Image (cartoon, rainbow, N blue to C red; front, side, top):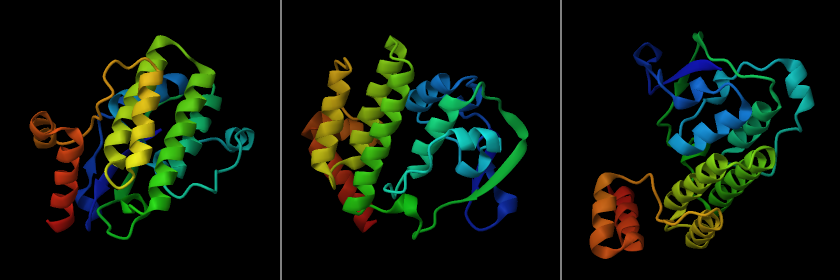
Length: 203
């Protein structure tokens, strides 16, 4: 894994993601645990993968339209003998592009987001179903619920149910801004998330 960073228009102004938790992973299982626990990530271009490893992994899942890279590299990581962070290898990632795939909120895109997370979690638990993996998976489901609601309310409900099935005593979505969490204590989580959605739409 190389180091990656974001820029908007000028690559010389790249802000490097120097402290991603997944840089410390030494196995595929640990990588996915850290990814789900911390919402850390590796930009696809920062992966340094031997061709022989790619040939052992099933092809890219073409039915996915959003986070298809995350699902693919989950399988790559689990097939690797070990992982290593190479900080000198650097990738500039242009973000904040309105037309980018990662910003799409269509029903198809949100369904893909749900399915990619479902597959990623199933890959982890098939390889390692330890208490840590189950807790990390539950956190992943709770975070996904926050991302899906309110546009895909049914998928968000299913994500929260999946978290409960993994033993989560609290299935409240996570990963939302502090003001949304505060509003949720006053008006309930669904209403607070709707307020955030409306604010983002009209801001």
